[in-house]
Amino acid sequence: MLTAGIDVGFENAKALILKDGEILAQVVVANGREDMGQVIARAWQEALGRAGVPAGALDRTLATGDGRAYATQAQEQASEARCCARGTAWLMPSARTVLDMGAETCMAIRIGKGVPLNIVRNDRCASGTGRSLKMAAKILGLSLEDMGACALLSREEISINNTCAVFAESEIISKIHHKHRLEDIAMAVFRGLARRAHSLLVKVGLEQDLAMVGGLAGNPGMIQALQAELGCQVLVPERPMVVGALGAALIAAEKGGS
Image (cartoon, rainbow, N blue to C red):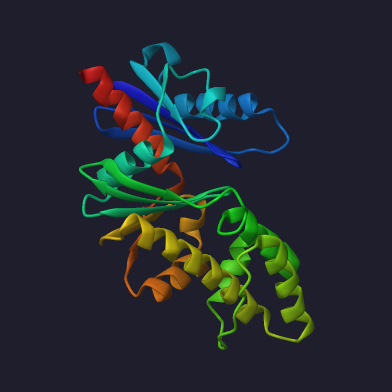
C-alpha cells in the first residue's frame, strides 16, 4: 500500500509518502509569499521526487491541518487531532497524551490506541502559540532558534504574567528597560507558554507518557520550560513537525486496506 499525508499549517506545508509502513520521504516547506496552493504543490512534488514515485502510483492521499481544503492532491480529509493521535501512537506507542504546539494553535489530546479520546484547544488568541513566541523573539532581537538556546542560559527566574500576547509584549519591553538579562526574559516567555499549555493538559486529563509534536517541539527552551512546569519528561519524536502528515498517511493506508 502506497499512501501520502499532507498537513497544511499556518506557516508550513508538510508532505509524507508511506509504503507498507515505511516512510519513503518527508518534506517541510515554509509558507513564504506564495499562494498556499503553490506551497502545498512544492511540498508534494518534492516528497514524490524524494520517494521516487509518480503521483499516479499512490493508492490514496489524505490531507489534514487548518489549510487542508487547499490540498487538491488529496482524495480525503481528516481532523488534526485524529492525524496527530495516529502519528504519535505509531512513533511513540507509550504516549497517552499529546501536546501539539504550532504557529497558530496549541492543542492537548488524550489518546488511546491511536485515536483521540479527549481534545482541548486554546482559543484563537495568539497567546500560547508559536506566533506569540516569534513576537517575543523579535522584540529580543533573536531568531526563534537562538531564543531557545539563549533561554537555557537563564540564571534568574522572572515572570511574564500577562496571558494576552499584546500585553505580554509590553511586559517584555518593560523587562528589557529594567535591564533584565535577555536569557532570563527568554526563559520567562517559555515558562509563560508552558503554564498555558499545562492548563490545557489538566483540562484534557493528562496521562503519562506525554509527547510533544508540532513546530515548537523542536525548541529546547520550550521543552525545558514545559518539563520544569509539569515535573515530568516530555517525549519528542525526531521530526515533530511531520507527525500530522504521518498520521494522515497511516489513516489513508488503513482506509485503503478496509
